[in-house]
Amino acid sequence: MLDPAAPQLVVNSRTLYFSWLPADPDAVSALVPPGLCPRPDRQVFINQYIVEDETQTSGFGAYSLTYLGISLLGVDAPGGLNPGGWWTSYVASSRRVREYAAARGAPVVSGRTRFDLDGENLLSETEVDGTPLLRARCRVGETGHVISSGHHRYFTRRDGQLLSSVYPFVAEPVAPFEIESVEFLQPGHPMYALRPANPLSIGFGYYSPRSSFAYPGGLSVHPVAGAAEPARPTHQVPASLARSGLPSGS
Image (tube, rainbow, N blue to C red):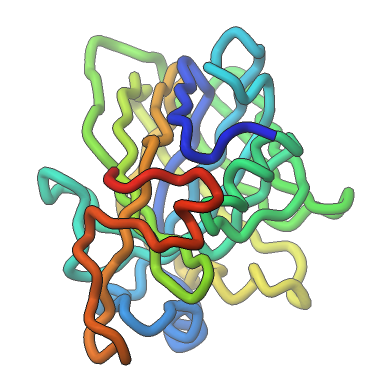
């Protein structure tokens, strides 16, 4: 098992990342834990990516991954351009990646993500236990000289505490880019609560054949207003995490 305190680097993954407005805003709100606040529009986001070869990572190996979540209010990533997000689903093909992420509080399950690119038509699909759960169809162009870079901030929960980490990224998005459809295929699955409204309303998004990012080495405890105990400074990590090898700071 990888040390969950160690940072990890992924380079040149194929990445589809976008957001939408949900069909059931109340169901989305119910997934956000106390201490965090969803945006008024209840925006949902998804990141699907594929790492083709083990040489593209510092320790993860080759794998595919999809995570979904809910955009938050008042906890933006550094720079203020990207809202913080609460992860609701984290579907990874690699046991090594799942163990690493679970130690950081991510809601991991085993599953696979695939991309099929035919000319300008891109289809992405994520499955769990061999059952497709969601599918997106896009129109994509060619990469140019534009670079998208910055930070994302994601929240997880472990041992009753909210944890925050900031993830740097650099991507080469294609142009043009258009999301044509997003389908949630299993009404009985908990992920169905995040399905998009009809008509589809897309927020941000891009597809990049080369997207690089890092998992930071540290996690910060996010203080919750009204907690029974005084909130810890955000540079500290609770003793239970320290014992598991996670350092203070982010």
